[in-house]
Image 1 (cartoon, rainbow, N blue to C red):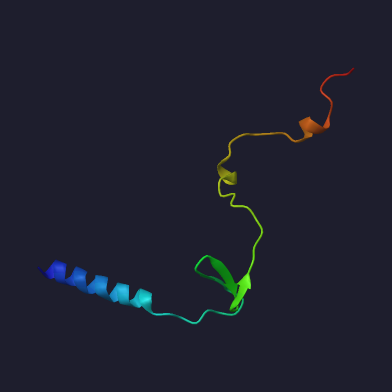
Image 2: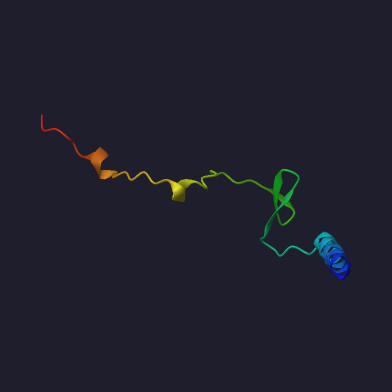
Length: 72
C-alpha cells in the first residue's frame, strides 16, 4: 500500500511538472503543429533525415571511381 501511494504521488507530480510551460530562449527552434518556429516566426529547414549513415557498414573507396580500371 505504501509503495502504491508513493508511486501515485510520484506519477502525479511528474505529470503536472511536464505540463508547466517554460519560456523558450532566443534562437531556440520549437514546433507548433507540424511547423518549425524560430523566435515566433516560421522556420524552414532543407536537409535530409540520414540517421542511418553512421550505421552503413559498406566500405567504398571513392578514388576507385575516379581512376580507370583497365589500360586500354
